[in-house]
Length: 99
Image (cartoon, rainbow, N blue to C red; front, side, top):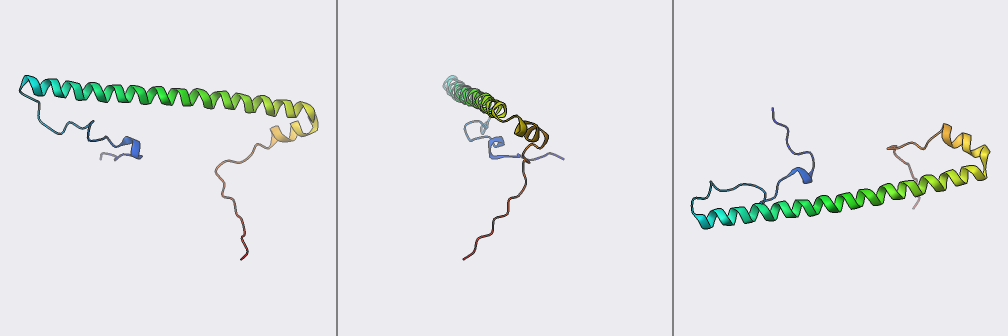
C-alpha cells in the first residue's frame, strides 16, 4: 500500500513532474535540461531560506534561555518550581466568552 502525501509541501508542482516522454530532438533536450536546472536552482534557494530561518530560530531560542536564566537568578525560589513543572505543550485551552 502506497502512502499519499502528508502535507502540501509533499505534492510536486507541475514543473517538477515529468509530464512528457523523453524528448527526441536536440532543442527539446536543451529545453528539458533548462527546466531541470531551473527547478534545481529554485529548490536550492528554498533550502537556503529554510537554513537562514532555522538559524534565526536557534538564535532566538538561545536569547530566551539566557533571559529565563537571568530571571531565575533574580528569584532563586521560583527557579526550582519552574524547572520542576515545565509548561505543557499541545493542551487545549478553554476560554469562556459571555455575550
